[in-house]
Length: 415
Length: 94
Image 1 (cartoon, each protein chain N blue to C red):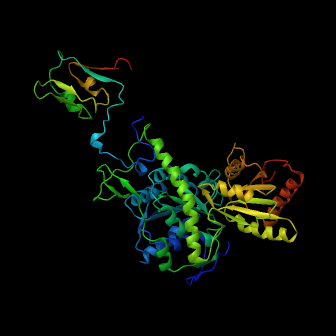
Image 2 (tube, chains in turn green, brown; image 1 turned 90 degrees about the vertical axis):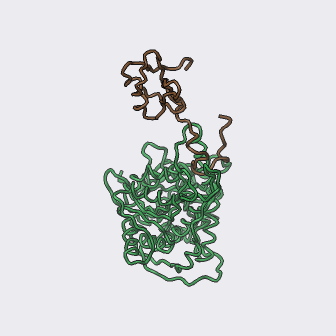
């Protein structure tokens, strides 16, 4: 987290919350119309806490207890189509059960906000944190943002509504937090007042569409302006609508940065440029690229290494979709060796997802680092900070010799 | 497909730009119904059973007519006709 230029900041209340509670608290402040959800570890605290707010009359939200995640996301999609601001949360098998409707929501351009407390997928069954669940939804058409800690989870949810509902974007958005590491860990969270958050997020905005009656009206179901949403589009038009989604992602690329900067002005908190967050990377020779809470642990290691005279840095990918390729190219252009840490696996693939995409982003660069993949933390397997030092030691060796012994390492695996 | 609009010209998220009244839904059928007028008794069993309402008697002659803009070529009419006056054919040249 970097401190931007301090302006006159509104007073903030410090609250001790875990990541899930911080998300529920942010949703409470965003004046959400409909929450439809089904509990699943490690997300349960989010909807449990939010249902408390509903029961206490602290929010005006319609809370829908659904019988499955497939129904939860469908209810959000439908409510969103009528113009409501909607939120849901899920993880692992729950997110997988939403799979079909995740594509529908993105294709229908309904700006649902979904918090994912990242958890492994079965089998074997496992409730602990890794990125298998949301990485499996990479191509669903949602914006993907991953937080590093509870504070960023709180901040990102507030930004998420504004990004998703921007008329030039109008796309659904995931905010990912590492299961247990963030979702269940008590942290200090600085919170803005309800008024400040509500002024920042504002009312939901709508793009305009032309209906069959030839009227140009806000994009929402309204008896005064009837329109057909979600019709069939076959060989003649399906492709054109998919291309529109790509354009919306390009717009999101700009809006994520812009809204992140506006939020920094009211909160005093920023995370790189909103797309990537770097730590001591400017003059670094070796670097680790990673998503999520692991970056926090690595910062301590980098500080130690810097004291020892080793020029180590971190590139944290905060926004995974739209993929910040240009930012990554710039950030890594002078690095000699890079390790991409993937907390998910693509069995049979050439390394895992983040590795493939980062290496792809660097392919056309005239000068690029040697790049290797470390798959780690699957099913919540813990690694100590000292373990992570080993990766930087490997990178030192690669930078020195100019070659990597192996491209893919299963880090923390008994072999 | 040159008369079709580009991705920049169409409304967001497949919001339909024209009324569904104007959509002709029978343009992808494989089989076409074919009537042998001599056999037809004008009982209208086919018209009653057509799931698309695509069979109507001509108001002047009483002879049944198929609205091919909406007929899906399902063949229920041919199957149910008590005198086998309708048969389903693949149009020539297709």
